[in-house]
Image 1: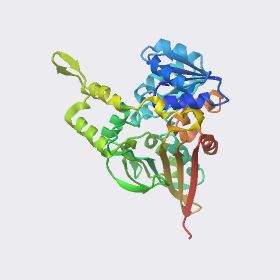
Image 2: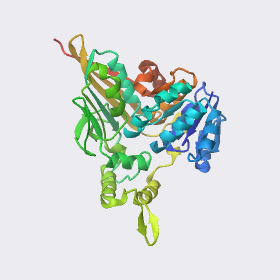
Image 3: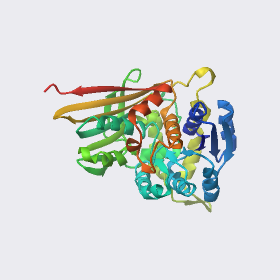
Image 4: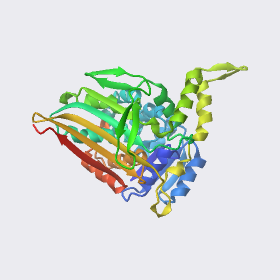
Length: 390
């Protein structure tokens, strides 16, 4: 089995590469990245003979198609802007596809490729990382056991860094979009816009996380869950996170920059040179992204110090009785599911376990099998069921 990881030199792509290289079902892993030096650094750190490195510019469509023809599945771990063009190449190459998410609006566009993937006989699974991905499958677990669904509420809790820590937890461009674009929520049967960093509430996570302040953020789960479980009558779906795992102070500083126009993608004239303020800001902020190797498990199986719990609460009824399912997927110094989960799905795609077409995770992945695979990587899911006595 040969799997290609686009953006494998990145933080989450590197975790996917490591997960695949450590899996006995995988024979070869190709890191495909625009930065071959960074890709080689990831390969050297992992130290597996299964890994090879190649340079791919995703703007070269024909080269991408040729690279995809030779593999059994592809993990797209690049920024979500590339999802649609990479999927176009997968149709042409007839290569199964999985990505880490499309930030709602791109996900909705990707779903429109379903018929073309079916005709090509190829499967694609959209948005499989920590979140989206894990919450979708958590929701499916509960939905399978309920007659009706009132609400699906998702909370992504991440261990907060010290106030002086200015690091970004993942791609700067994606965080900027999540920080400034209006979150979509599903309420009373309708998709509506909310304000960024709004509707704060404190949520109690499993120890050692404890109580964290949570706010709305634009995310892909909301794009698919209301459609997938429409037959259950779902009325509410939202996604909340705690400052994207960054310090509130760092988020506040970035918001000020955005408020002053530095997130504007339209070029402006600077001494006769056209410069897009957003491009400049992204370039400058990238120095606050930790290197990919900081996210990989070192030798002797001593993973980095992170703690994360993804919780989905699904409220509904079974045989007329009100029931709430709480599924919490906890990582304490285990593999980060943002990179591990798409690696699992890539293996399933290469094995032919998923039918042709474009699927959200909740319709493509068997929950119990998926959680069992995550558990092997130190990512455990607990289910709590609360029901009315009468």
